[in-house]
Length: 434
Ligand SMILES: CC(=O)N[C@H]1[C@@H](OP(=O)(O)OP(=O)(O)OC[C@H]2O[C@@H](n3ccc(=O)[nH]c3=O)[C@H](O)[C@@H]2O)O[C@H](CO)[C@@H](O)[C@@H]1O
Ligand SMILES: C=C(OP(=O)(O)O)C(=O)O
Image 1 (cartoon, helix red, strand yellow):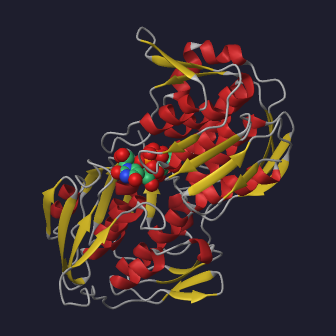
Image 2: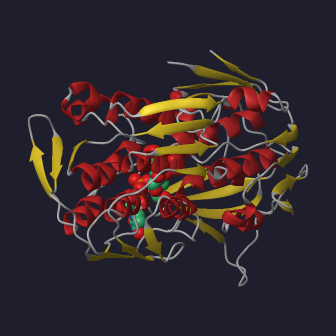
Image 3: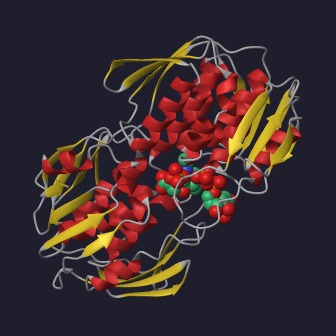
């Protein structure tokens, strides 16, 4: 398993361009299964999770071409449904969470799908009820095969239905949406998730001939159509990467410009960093972070301690809370980090405590960070990355620390960050991949 060796204490300077969004890529690539026509997707990030999904589609006999480094074409005109029965498919699709979203398109177009337990980050319970209940409401039946530990999903023809989701699940909404576009009649999805990922998926599906309205809200209405056609789609910049770079710049005292951020789609991410005292300057679609000598966490208006908490969109994405937490360790002031959605995402704070950070893990969901200001540098350390976002948070900590750190299990970082060592080294970081 690969590792990073990081020499801390170097400032970054210059420009960095965010990759395409991982979580959008996983959705729109699955959506290419909905049509026999060619779909072209630009700005595809070159990261493990996305490459594994593309490989899975290839093995299902989807014709995949790569006319440019970040552009792929997909043509699902001869999908091999027998491949779904193979052990290889089960092993590969269970290695990444995004693969759960092939169920909606397959059952809608071919009346059949198989689903092993999906992979993804081990960050607490990650149930799939929303996916199952929604697709069942459209008329599909789910059978569980205990020997092979997989679900077999079947439907002759899906029929539109009204549904109020029990939670605004991101991949759940995408899955149900992709199933409903080819269902007969009208589907209404209330309490739908509405992240930019889903807004992008919806616009792409509409360009393919779907009839989805309410895009960007939590009430989606879908008029089913007989068939969908090809299209061209461009993936948005990855808002989680943009946020990671903002935090990294502040914590390492660097002056950087993040290019082409898709600013209008970042929601409250920039303001949330501003609440930690970080200067985030919007320059058109770019973000400039000037070098910070220090940054001071605001209090709430009544003087009480700031809370940074996740919420469903347009609230703050849970995928950035690990970054907020690490950045707060070098701020002046205190903040409560409240990770409401996942149960095991904050345990990595032990590693930051080893590095000298002042953090109280109140319970699995809440950590109080007492910012030490940059007078007290973190100490270098040897650590293992438990999940993708803790991984980038530990990388940021190591880049700001005194001395040389090592992070093992960096596959977790590579799942979501494209060539991160090379890109950061090109603006002044000292990271070696072993
Ligand atoms: C491949 C992909 O796109 N992964 C993202 C997707 O995962 P994913 O779609 O798997 O996550 P869900 O939106 O289903 O749920 C995430 C967690 O939040 C909880 N929950 C969800 C909604 C809600 O209203 N209340 C609530 O408590 C769920 O029980 C679960 O524990 O969305 C998550 C939440 O933004 C992100 O962290 C993941 O990066
Ligand atoms: C949790 C994440 O990914 P996944 O849902 O693919 O595990 C993430 O991107 O932060």
